[in-house]
Length: 396
Image 1 (cartoon, rainbow, N blue to C red):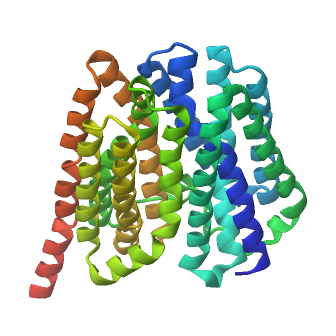
Image 2: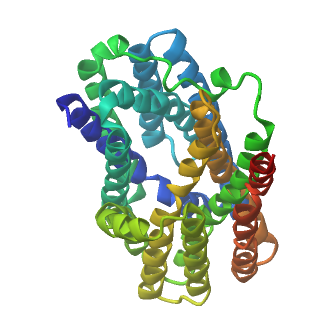
């Protein structure tokens, strides 16, 4: 890889490590330390993701029309200021919520430019370019979760300080190392979804994508329960905070280490639909195990299983979106897939919190397992109309 991509990988790892010190613990902190309901914690996480979506759209538009370097710099600076303030004012729920929302917005502005920068600096890298960022992100998740759990077990206050320190390092990297960002080529290759939308020409393909993504949305709603409702649940049944964070370290490291295994499987299971079927079935199995888990070992087994389903299934959706996209519309279709994932992350914590507050965790597990059968149907049916049209045209 070029030196610039290595620098981007390092910056990504530092940024995600800082964020991962806190994000797995947000629900625990709001529920256990600030005394708020899971529904309230879910609402704040929903607003955080909503701000992230808005920031993503604005960041993409500013990248196209203004300055890539300044967009990234200002987005990072905004997040840095918010995490610094959070390190001082995290005992008040209103301040906590406000700063968490600002962090979501600032990070949302930054990430489209990060991906655009990767693609523009090494266009010949193809999938390797974005896979490097993907691996860096998950390495950051693993490192942040590992460190965060042990630090939080000593004092939550140190988590906020460590988070601010790593964001400061990331800001300095952006400030001094990415000055030439405005000179990158192919500035339209990662334009925002709003900029790309235009007029939908192929309605069959677009309808197929919406059907496919409806299942993707359900999967994300289920997946977010690990961060939103399962996190406080582990505390209630006596699992130490550092052990819960270790679960996310397992997730991050396993994603990185399992890439050869994933390649071996996908080389033999070439049907992308089958990859979704198998990945969803594995995810259902993980929630069945969590339903009866009472100690760290069972949760760890469930996380390993969940991760194996995740790494098999996640790449399948953008792959199918790319196949469905008419010529010149790949960016819009990929942007829609990413937006659907963001919506799932946005509404999942709130829905889960409401169910647990109104009923209990057992009901939530039954609901999650039930809705995870929906992706089987959507994946089976999404391209049915397209296949019929193809058969009709070939018959003619």
